[in-house]
Image (cartoon, rainbow, N blue to C red):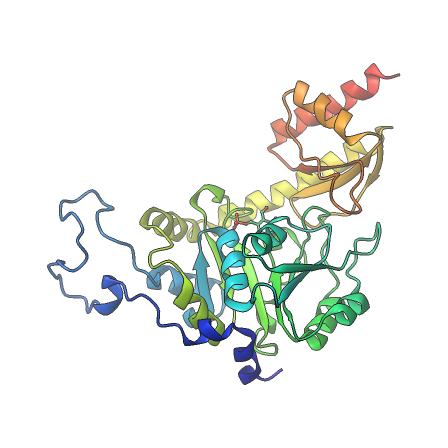
Length: 353
Ligand SMILES: Cc1ncc(COP(=O)(O)O)c(C=O)c1O
């Protein structure tokens, strides 16, 4: 697909929109210490009495170096959740366009589409292997399919999708292909950021909420062609990323050795958990995982969920999702937390002999 071909994927009025010009965008700092009387702030120092940089230039330049892209190829959101919503707003005309999702999948795509009155086309993953059904996706898509959301590794199934399948979708799908790499750090597959040059309609999402250990600061990233980023900048709230978040993320970028060690530890712990749960009789299937969580099929998920709650352990019961009957999704915890979970499984097993 040619770069020019992506402009028509945005809604017409969004393409023409003149964005709000915030005070801190009109004045471009040149390094001099200025008296700031332009934004009606309280001048007395609280460390956060000034508005943050609306375009987050310092953080974007650090992320650009980290992820080997240009700063103009980065959009930052208040979590990936905000970016997902903004993409739907930018591209989908309610009552006319739709997004494609592949259930079982991350729930926010459908919720965001519903909030904005945008229709959903659901093309389920293949049963039990949880692979993408590429032919069905391409057959179901038409000129109103503006976005397909593909999380890889997938939530809640935890598997990553085949690169060949993702390539086939990128080759055949005419809308934006959003590859949501929220769990990328846990997977052995390399990020699709390196495919951005080849595919102008590819957008890669990543987040500081999972491996990076900053779910509380809410920072999601979109990597895309600068044309796409310009449109997202046009529709965002002026100061969508707050000063404390900017500071915390900049600090975290300097702690990547720690993140790497934690990821390695979590992967070792995942293997230990899976091996310990394998012999439990009420666990019928443990699905392959490329993330920091895994999905299991049990005899009765509601009963097991309640029993774990009784024992002080909260897991996720995604059983209402297509293809996930009687399943539980378990995040990997600290070694101590995992010991307690293993004990809980064994205790339940013993009590039922
Ligand atoms: C696939 C996927 N994408 C995005 C998110 C949300 O990320 P954020 O915390 O950045 O909004 C999640 C959270 O569970 C997720 O599973």
